[in-house]
Image 1 (cartoon, rainbow, N blue to C red):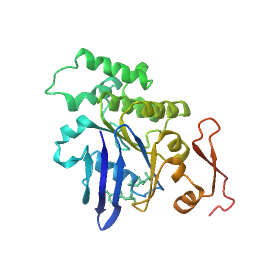
Image 2: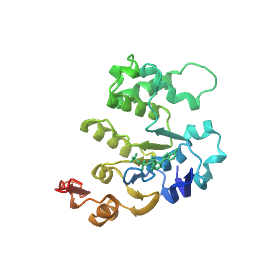
Image 3: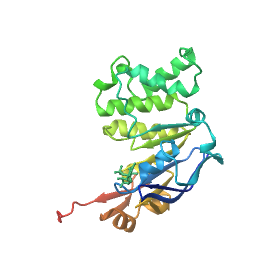
Image 4: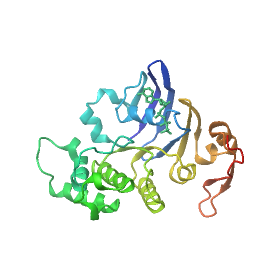
Length: 258
Ligand SMILES: Nc1ncnc2c1ncn2[C@@H]1O[C@H](COP(=O)(O)OP(=O)(O)OP(=O)(O)O)[C@@H](O)[C@H]1O
């Protein structure tokens, strides 16, 4: 399923948080959004999972205006792992994962055998099966993040929207999650802070600065020292990964403490 952000702008309280952002995520592609804190990345994603309505512009799924779909209808296609996804209620891990089926259900019928298998597989893939009976509020940040990702998988989405999905995860689980995202064959739009992980995981990368898209292209086209200097104010050396050839950024700590 193709995802297209077609010139979306978000204005709140007189501030322009996102300005005329156009971004294409072809079916099955993984596209990353990077940018400094406050550059509008999460705000742009919120328009895709419908926590926000763009002030202007349109989000399209396979050419169809997302706002023409019911919320339930779009939730059958789009799953989101967001900064706000943490459940405040003390459900068990198994219950939270099962909630991923909600958009597909009618009434209160229990999950059928296939759906139960789906939940079990998703918990195994995200390495949380051993936590199934634990309350989510007792979990560490990384464990909870993996549970929420399992819930997204159970939703069987055609588009996955991930806001800093590697947040809280140790390096093994970061690599595991991004490898899964790459292999899943789903259309993925994700925000990452780690430019090296973005380089490894994404087909294309868009760079946001002050709400505007200031660069986009393949990791090799986008992750260049001049962009990192202009957008992040950081000096970086770019080297090809010795095994994959993906551009990797090497940083040196600044002697200037201001
Ligand atoms: N509801 C809101 N009302 C007013 N300003 C907002 C609102 N939500 C976000 N902002 C502001 O919009 C700007 C962009 O926020 P956003 O969360 O999209 O940035 P981000 O690029 O995801 O940042 P980070 O990397 O820190 O997560 C920030 O300056 C933020 O303070």
